[in-house]
Image 1: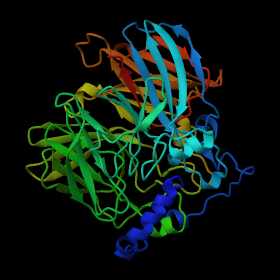
Image 2: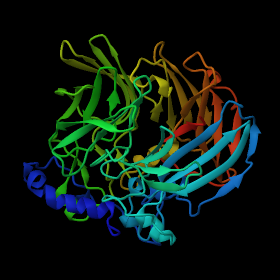
Image 3: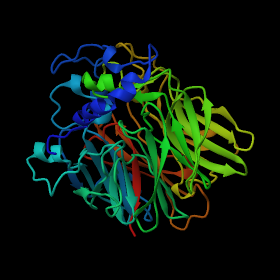
Image 4: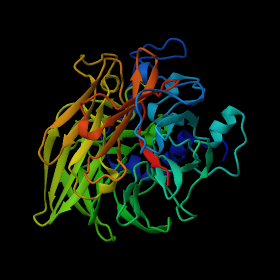
Length: 504
């Protein structure tokens, strides 16, 4: 399978799915990326407007670095003992920007090791898929999995392992404590088929949950991995049109499945579209409640939005509450010729409240400021929480909304938000112009008794140094000066998701 790539896989899926997708009767409401030409961009003639996901804070880094005893402004709390890791796309040897899409860049994990009040090291390493090892002139250990990819979306700790994750096909890759790639990981030989980038770990039940999709499936799969680290139950949920399900939610009673109107387009895949997923006006938007123990999914139709990421979800009697980040419809995952996704507006923090007994779903807006990458104290996944953290990077919104080369106005800025979901309102920690900020990750203080007793960590670009800092905020003094700024030797490009991996 040495020549197998995500694009060849999707083209193969197009052939397999042609009867069900192309012949499904979808008409003019089916927006196909291949039919939406954008500005021309070549190796040397690309402009900033044409390639926003390869420029500025998004620009890939060209080498792997290792640095020890990093310089620190302020202090590092002694109870931060572990690694802060973040994954993201970083294309290796990109030959033609016209064939690039931000979400398909080779995964690179950036990490900082903290111990005893010191920043012991920084490392950045590409995830070693078969293709990456070939490009780097390294041997690939063993046989590559059928749908091999350098997972670029998330990196999580799980039962003493570090796993780099991708959705819709590839197995996770296991990394060691110094970010070297160990092997593909299949949960002790129990995972078959696709996995996801966004798992949900229930700390009380010691269960890892996933919703997986795949272009040729007529269903999605709820996967439950129990305390043994094995897949013990897979529930198939029928869906039409092979939708893209990037995230989901978990409560004490339910798996919350969001069926979005972004669906696989076999014709676009066959024509060579890099990302053959399109906004489909004829595909109804639905939220489904699947009992965690398995059974039948109950669906609630709603007005279309692009549901991006879950903050959290929980039960309140016969009501399910789910908080999430969403973009206005339509949303073009494949983009419009600029190498990344394209939005028609900024993402906001919203809530769905589902009255299970009455069969009603109600939506509400929590915060209309541009923001993404919602996180909570991870110990409260699937249970009622009070505090939440989100990020806003001005350069990201300009890239998302740069349609046909026309960027939006300069209303956007860089900040982290701490939300009080009980009393309402929030606190902003602002960063300077050009200081693009990444996802905030909450780390509880050792011995913490309050939900927000801990630290918020985020990579923040320093435009003056042309490099990145790992910023440490005290969560209970969110607007105050950072406790510490760890100065990295290079940049961490704007990317996706990460985790705190505590030492045992």
